[in-house]
Length: 240
Length: 234
Image (cartoon, rainbow over all chains, first blue to last red; front, side, top):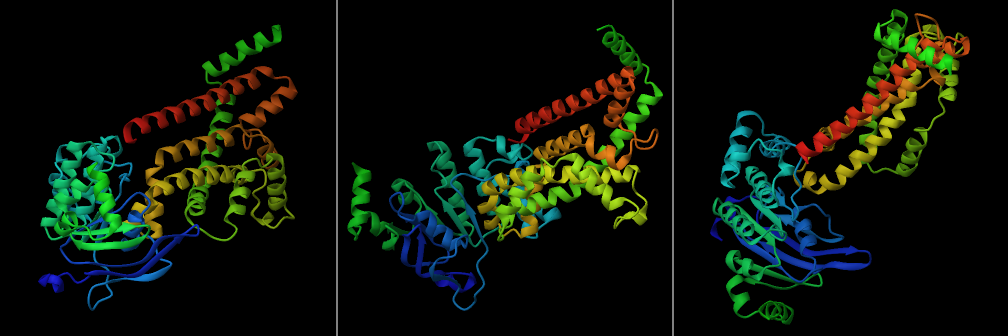
């Protein structure tokens, strides 16, 4: 990753991140580096701590121990956005949702309109820009959530199982959008249940089991020969 | 039975012909209640939203107090405002007692808890849904509050209608601080109370019909607004 210095807020380095909820160590000493321009997929069984790790990396949850640091020299967090499993859309039009997010980031007026139009076009929702967001279909809502996130031009985009409740065509559409966002230079950090999806999209795989990182490796190597026994069991479970 | 049907016919006639005595009382009623609702909205909406979003020690106690205050006895509120505004009271020098502003003050005290408590509930529900997304967008406290108030605007409108309904149909507080002075502070509820005891059942009934119609129209309006907003915005 020779272009690390171009992206000031990256890499994201988590060291010793520990999170305790109701006496359970949901995350247990996680050390992890998210490299610039990578597509890192966090895999693991239900309850392994994937969503929590994503929220800690994004800054939504402060860990009980350990820390998340940004960049090599600066303490400036990267511009970042997150797409949730169930998209949270406001009671406004599709375009209004994007413009609202831009306004919070201090982007208004013609610039905001242009960015919102571009983002909607990118997810093929330009035709329904004026429709109320919350009456769109599930797939359209998730694409709108992606458009809103991408309009912020984040350096890092976090996605928490964005296709978990979508049908296969909608999932493929979301994957295509994630790819195009990555192609424009955004670092992707995503959790998923689908090994096939991780195979299609991931550069790096982080495997979590009971709050610990058992593997953090190149995606091709992970799927060919997972080193940890938990990951092997997980992959074999999928093949059955 | 005869008295009732006669009075009813007379009352309908007064409503139909827009009897000046009747219209003046109705107009004052609406003006006072609108003013109270406006003042209560200025206090109650931000207060409810703040309690919904902020986390501070004693928050549960504040919520319980707000909910309890929805049932404030109007006559007690009337008495307290009377004591405040009477010549010897701390606000006596403003000479507000037995004027419409005094009635607005009393009604505002009665409605603020209703608006604040219902706003708190509505905004808190929305906050539960929006919190992570708004934090992800790095929204400030003020930006979050404004977003929530705007997104719950149709629900909040029905809250304001409920507040207005309560103000318009309340009698205990306004009769104490307003004094029910003919042409000055006589509103629908106080006039109904007075005319009934005087035996002028036609005017009392006429006002009753108007008041009932108004309250019913408000509720139908609130219901339709909610339905329309749900269909339109989800």
